[in-house]
Length: 355
Image 1 (cartoon, one colour):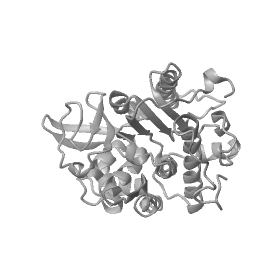
Image 2 (tube, helix red, strand yellow; image 1 turned 180 degrees about the vertical axis):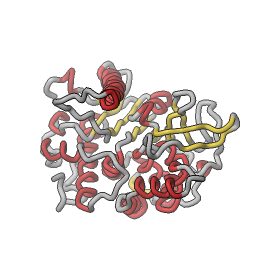
Image 3 (cartoon, rainbow, N blue to C red; image 1 turned 120 degrees about the horizontal axis):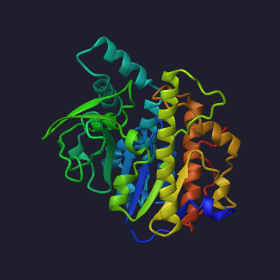
């Protein structure tokens, strides 16, 4: 790889304990991660995962996979009905502006919070009455949110909330996903009851947009899929107090995300962790493979800059985001995890490409 110290994006897997992290980033990331799961399924990796840790819109994708898991039919490690039970539900919800309707319903029904309306939308469109206790034993699905009272990470799993943070295992999956993706201030907060009283939760990306913490505590090998949006560069900095404050908050958030990514890559470099990182901003050429799918950087960067919304996404854009997640996951996996795997012959949606 060229400029190895900077572009080292993974390290060979050591052992069978593998965690997968799915970041936030609106429907952009939700669809990107769907392409990632598509390729992981083809590689036979899905049933080998010990944990899937997710945050924000990554939690939507993970929630769809968790909801579908009992119905998936695996043959030689590959779910042959993956498209019907995972891809189609994700694409169906991408046709709906969940954020707009949740906000409008919250405004006209003040006795219900926008967060409750968001959970209701997820229940109607994706998860029905599925509850945390219904999640599979393996892989362990963890959905992360931010506790606005303590500033700590709040984690939902089959056992309730892991690491001695009590929550009700009868909690609807839709509520856990809504808490994880309740982007402040418009979609936040989601209030859940625990044995210690009500907990006020917001988007897990406020604390950790890569959903790294749970995976790092339980897995020595971590695959990280990052569909997050980078902070926009601006030439003219506003001088009024409000816009300066908002810009400062963006910079603080960007610094935290950059530090988490840098720490992750350093762990790959020194061998502390095995696994691979890929993101929507990645240059596929940095993986050093000669047979990746065609993904020109100029086109993939346009996909990486799609606004962070839970808003109706045109069909062709859905397909391109799925294609891009599929292609960059393939590059990361074949470079660092499954080097003997054959290269894919084409994109899931060949006519759409990545732009």
